[in-house]
Each structure stands twice: as structure tokens, then as C-alpha cells.
Amino acid sequence: MKTRALMSLTALLGLAGCATTPTAPPPDENAPPPAVPAQAAPPQTAALPERPESVPAKPLGQPEPLQTVVLARPDTPIVSFRLVFHTGSVDDPKGKEGLTALTAQLMAEGGTQKLSASQLLEALYPMAAELDVFVDKEFTTFSGRVHKDFLARFQDLFTDVLLAPRLDSAELERLRANAISDVENGLRSANDEALGKAALEALIYEGHPYAHFTGGTVQGLKAITLDDVKGHAQRVFTQDRLVVGLAGAVDDALTQSLTSRLSALPSTGAPRVKLPAVPTTAGRTVIIQKPTLSTAVSMGFVNPIRRGDPDFFPVALAMANLGEHRQFIGVLFNELREKRGLNYGDYAYAEHFIEAPGSTYNRTNIARTQQDLTLWLRPVVPANGVFATRGAVFFLSQMVTEGISQERLDLMRGYLQGYTRLWEQTDQRRLGYAIDGLFYGTPNFLEQYRQAMTEMTPQSVQDALRRHVQPDALNFAFVTEDAEGLAKTLRSGEPTPITYASPKSAELLEQDKAISSAKLPLRPEGLQILPAQQFMEK
Image 1 (cartoon, rainbow, N blue to C red):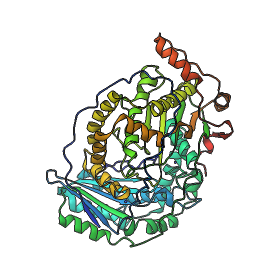
Image 2: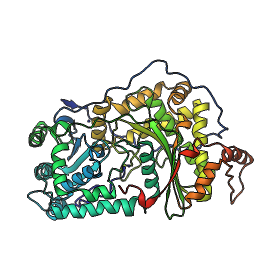
Image 3: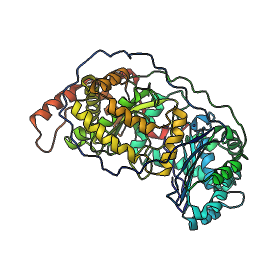
Image 4: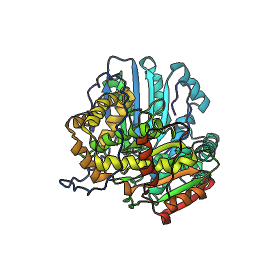
């Protein structure tokens, strides 16, 4: 939802003193090397090791009022702003799901007291400025970017969005209609992959504030009034929830000016939501039924670790080994797509993933108290849906029980030492990581990750996997047309052999036999079918 001289806020997909960080080094532009993993063998069972010691999760950071992160860089004429509030969809009242997202959108896109929505666009255009907002479960980020020649004018506009939003009823109706369309015509109809991911999130977080789609539900959005929006802005966009980030052509005068302006925000608002523990689930399945030519698959479980836990780094490397977004190096990508031609891509993540627009990287400032480990398969031909699911579980299980070879570990370590530098190649991303570090207690997260990789061994990675990644804990979400047929196949547990249009090696065909008959870790009684038009209705 980026605006460059034209502010266009699109649908949000998703179901925190003073700190100064040194200037980041220039990014490493080396491209990740392609590789094809060694031939897998059927997974074997093994006892799970105990953790060598009890390592409690670090307390999560709570912001001080107007906490500030400054990354000054005199070699650029660009100034980047990043205002991160500790609020998100967890603050949506029951029955008005989507209130935080709609409020943030109306503030950022609906104009200010001085300028209408169209006049705000006209003011941004000649500056080639960016003004953006993104809402997740616990964080809402207002970001901006402008050349220093236009800094004074842009700062006025950027702060007025927060301090003096127009909150116009006509703009509310326009944005509400867009938000409802994003659920009805976007999530439910146009994007099976996003629908499957949102369905999995709703499944594993059932009854938890994370469960509903960040953009809201249809009935929740319809119930929101302008007074709701005005009141919510005063409750959650407050000084005590705000981290102020500045990067680029920044000096003390700009920092003082911005924080002085933002001190006009309410000092405090509603108490922070106390998130309950997430009930443990395993083997549950939801099938979303809708007219579609393919089957989308998502699987995962609530992750017991997050950044700051010593085991997070080896688990993150191992999941990258299975495959991150559009990276050809991944085991799943090579085994399911390249060797078997099943689909476009197959990915795995140690923490929640939302793609940053225009990149293959995860967004920053979507930090969460509770994380989830997920695998998702870009839609496959329905006849191969169960085989592909079995294949993903098969190679996950193999990695856990047999580990990663020294050769493969060395390859992944070299790849990630370079690739992680691309994650911090812009001021906005460096600011995002620095602010996330306040929340997780990981002030130099990417450097810590790179250092941890130098100390990893195949045994240490496998031990961390066996402590935290149990395939039997997986839950599943499918999006398909023949929901009853898929449910019948899943409940039966019968083999799902695959056929090919071209010859395959005897070794691969032998492995396919093991995959096609492998038992999926799902409980038949835990399977439900839901028509797409009912998903996120209320």
C-alpha cells in the first residue's frame, strides 16, 4: 500500500527512551546461489531431545512515550519516517472487526483538517513523496519518505494525518466499501493462496484476538460508525504506544521538531490488550469451498519460539532450507516443483510471513507476541493436492528426523550470510528491524543471526528442530472446489499416487510410493468444510 505521489491504500492481508543505531553498511548485492538438494529418503522416527536448559522467553518490550530510533545517514538526500504504534487488529472490539485498519486508512487517506483527500494527493504529487500505512495484529505503521528539499512541507502533511485527520463521513463510506470488497471479492474470490493462509490463521488462533482477518469481517465493517473511528483513534494512537523512527538526512533539529509535534497526540488511551495463551491444536483441518480450478494448501502450528530465543536462529535456518519466498534454493521448491512439476512454489517460515510489496522479503513491524510456523503450497492441480501436501510433510519430517548435512548447512549458511544483507538494504527496512528489536529484545537481530550461523553445526540445528518442530503438530487449510471429495480422501488415508506426462527416474518413482502412502498428521474428526462466502462474514 505504497504511495509515490499518488496515495493508494489497498486491502490488508493478515486473518515496539531513545535508541540510536549506527549507520548500516552497504548491502551485499551478491545473488543467492541456486542449488538442488540431495535426494531425500523416507523419514524415520526418533525420540525428541530435551532442551539442555530451560530458557524462558525474553519479556517483550513496551514502548516509553515517544520512544525514538534515529539512523542518521549523511550520504543521502532522502528522509524516511516510520511511526509505529503498538496497536493492531487485536484492539478491534468484538462485532466491529476491522476498526483499527479502517481507522488507520481513514487517517492516512481521508485528508486532513486543512486538506481534503484529493487535495492531500495533489500536495504529495509534486514532492514525489510517499505516505503509507499498514496494520497487522499488534502493530500499525505509518511511514513516509521525501527528499530533504521538501522536508518542511512534508512534515506538516505527515503529522497532520495523525494530529488533525479530517475523518470525513463520505471518505469513511468509500473506504468501508473498499474494505468490504477486499474481503468479498479479493480474499474470498481472487486470491486462493491468501485465503488459505487466512483460513489457517483463523483455525490455529480460534477464539484468540489473532483469529480474525486484519482487514476485518463483512458484518464487523458494516457495523462501524464514524464515532467509533473517532473514539478509536483517541484510544490507540497515543504517545505511550508510539515508537518514532527517522533515517537518512536526519539531524537533531528534525528529531526534536517531529517529537515536539507528536506530543500533541493523547498521552494515554485504552489499556493494552492482554493476549491470552493460545490453546494447543494439532491435526485440525479446514477446507474452504469455492469455485476454483486449483487447490491451495497451507499448514502450520503456533510456534513455541520467537526472536530472542536461542533456538530461533537454527530453526529459522532450517525453514529457509526448506524454502523461503520465491527462492530456488529450497528443498520443497526443488522436490515438488522442479522434480515433480506440481505447482509454482512451495515455502516454509519459522515466523509469520507477509511479503513486503515489490520484494521477496518479509515485512518489518509485524512483530507478534505469539508466532506461527507455516508451510504453504502455491495452488496445485486438485488431483495432486493431497500428494503435494504429503510431500511437504514428508520432507519436513525428513529434515527433523535426519537433520541437515554439513554440505547443505555450509551452502545455506553462505546463502543466508548474503541474502540477509538484502533485507536491510533500505532505510525503511533498517528502521523496521531496529524498532522490532526493541519489541523482541534483539537490538542487532540480523547481525546476531549471521553470527549464530557461524556457530551452528548439523547436530545443533537438528536438536533445535526436534525440540520445536514436530510434524504431528501441524494443522491444515485447503481451498478447493470439490471440498467433499477432498475431505473423503483425507479421512480415508488411502494412497494418492501421482502420474507424470514424461519419464522420471526409478529413484524418484520409488520415493513417490513412500510419499503417496504416508500418513498425514490430521484427525478425521477435526475436519470441517466452510463455504468461502461464510469466511470472515462475521
